[in-house]
Length: 281
Image 1 (cartoon, rainbow, N blue to C red):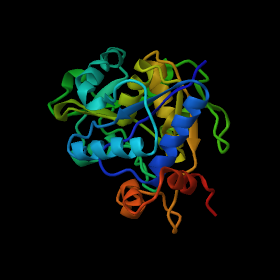
Image 2 (image 1 turned 135 degrees about the vertical axis):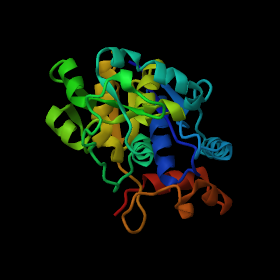
Image 3 (image 1 turned 180 degrees about the vertical axis):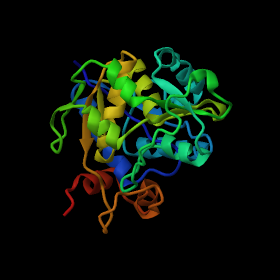
Image 4 (image 1 turned 30 degrees about the vertical axis):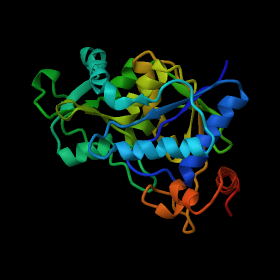
């Protein structure tokens, strides 16, 4: 089976050294196996995703010598389609409308960040009928009901050195640490990143997902969604993170590690590869 993987940044800021490591790793693994490498813009956050950041991402990846197969995929063009595909879950009674605060729901729709605790939803709106949905309500997955609808022994394969084995999704752990996640808020036209990615990975034929280890703990929710929608589960590889001198994961606000800054200071793509792939103390 040829590797088909992707690099899927959100155009909300410049790429940094950590992004370079992830993109190069995914690109080189695919190319070494004679596979395909795709580029996807996870731009469902219409307030923060800006065209100039996408231009910068393309410039940085091109400068690094990376090439991708086919056109760039934009999630923002498919938000209505993502929401429409939730109808089977509604018909099975696996989602419910939630009228909790907008700020809480918007935070729940964002990609998780290392060091930021995930607040498990207490179930305030659980049990509400879809017929009671009001404009602005979000849709949450009823995780307990979802597990009842899933076959026993939902698993996913991991190939990274830190996690390499077959992992079983444990219902009790998932309900205690993930809970009833928000899938979308129709009134604002936004959708959870892990829902959109689950659909896109299947639609694009992605069979290997290579990304940072900060997302490892949220892999079960994607695997659950894949099973609920009858989608294939890719093989996962959660790589180490590039950190700053204080041991914190790099963020887009870390301009000192921005690829554009390295490039402006005269660094070469080989310099960036060497910095990214040199093990940190």
